[in-house]
Amino acid sequence: MVTHVRAEERGDERGALLAFIEEQRGGIRRSLLGLTEEQAASRPSASELSLSGLLKHVAEVEQGWIARAKGEPPAIKRDESNWHECFVLGEGETVASQLAYWEKVAAETEAFLRSVPSLDDTFALPPDPWFPPEGRVSMRWLALHLIRETARHAGHADIIRESLDGKTAFELVAEEQGSSWG
Image 1 (cartoon, helix red, strand yellow):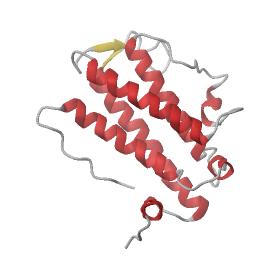
Image 2 (tube, helix red, strand yellow):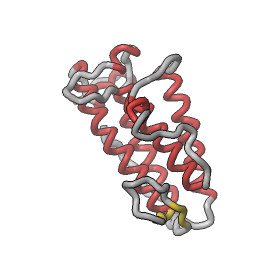
Image 3 (cartoon, one colour):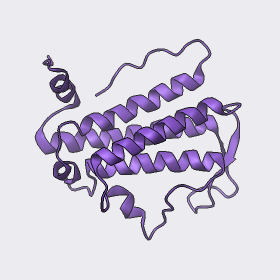
């Protein structure tokens, strides 16, 4: 569900970027409303994606990018051997625990992006083969990348949720608020 992002205060580019990241996080959170763990883990389409897997993935990716920008390693090191694990809840992981983790990551993202001296400051990209050698990106690039990454998966989440039970985000929010849409 698209929501309206309020206009930023004059000159508050960081606030605008953070508001758009949060808007897209909301799309993924809404897709999980009212589902059991089993429903959230199901894969109703030809894709291997599930709602709980998308939730885990976006939280992990966001944490990893903020860590890199701080010059730290991601909390979980992923490579070709374990990449698939970031799309499946593991032993003891639940939708609730992943939502709580993502909330913590989101707070860290906001604190970090508000604390950097300039959005023009840069950090090194990891030495992965899909990045240019010795590449650097700005904090602005980081925020825009998080918007893109989260929005892409919010779209996936919409399709998966509608495939599960035919409900759209508009209906889910209306149900949660006790009102009807349309």
